[in-house]
View 1 (spheres, rainbow, N blue to C red):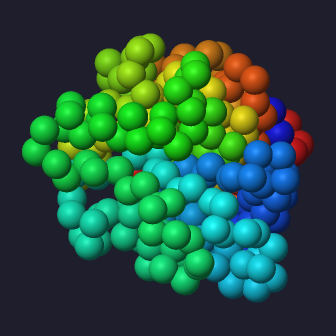
View 2: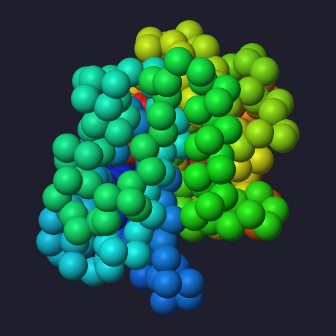
Length: 245
Ligand SMILES: O=C1O[C@H](COP(=O)(O)O)[C@@H](O)[C@H](O)[C@H]1O
């Protein structure tokens, strides 16, 4: 696991954009496709804006990029709480990505089990049906209580082993969501956590330096079986870490 601490969100976001650009170029060179799952929340907003502008924009062949989300809230796509809406406004609408390569998670559908299953099939259609689908890169955030994607402490979703996507009801509004499950997260080739802010310093310390307690700190579940995990933190989020990063 690689942990890097940055002085501010600008530096962190530039390093994340460099990292995504490198992984994208390698994936496109190797497989003619780059599959990227985005997080929600506000932390990646700066990063998404950077990817849509130079010098990053022209370094990636966006026609080869397939975009998914690691979780989504039960709101329409134009709602202020929609994870899709933020990424679309800041990044996707400004890039030459074919519409059919933008795979919004349909969390607002009434039958959430059916929506989860249909979206899992969509992931398999794009990434392949052999074994658990392997994203080239899943970008994640983490909440102050250690949740990631929409895997929250002490929820049954933390123990899901069969489904790729599942509906959850979580303690943070909006409560009803769809989320990637542990097996899908842990099949990724690369996972990039972006975590900023002093309110997350205890969770960062517990996840990175504490005992393995995934029911308390779901972000600890993310340990890809054959992939690399990178954490990019700002100094406020890293404040309580004992080791020099
Ligand atoms: O609810 C969510 O929160 C996490 C963390 O968001 P942040 O704004 O604190 O970075 C996010 O990663 C997740 O996708 C989102 O749905």
